[in-house]
Image (tube, rainbow, N blue to C red):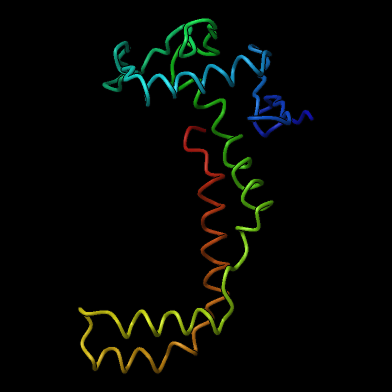
Length: 171
């Protein structure tokens, strides 16, 4: 399945173990995805230092991406699809949030997880067991818990979370 995102970049979403990214100047989506995956694995599992090479512009370090990255056994190598790490991040950032949203939505995680009554009871139980809250505060707060719209609060939190997912700080 192909689609075009707001930046005009074309993405390729394929079934299977991961999402693949194709860009106009680097159309090999599988290679691009594999580069990111292997770079992540090199940093997390093998201690690769992504800050070992950088240019400084206006006092800001711009990390130079390894021009190729190998998989763990060294049998496959994937080319970078940008010179700077920030360049590659700016290409995938508009895509990632929507992909996370779609995944969470498909799993039913972007809807209220508890009913009004369940949340009110959970809040009362939490408040009753809060050791740092004086009894007079507990009594006063408990009388207002049922008046709160707990389902709307969950919906508002979900809406805020989605807005954060879709925020593109690089554009």
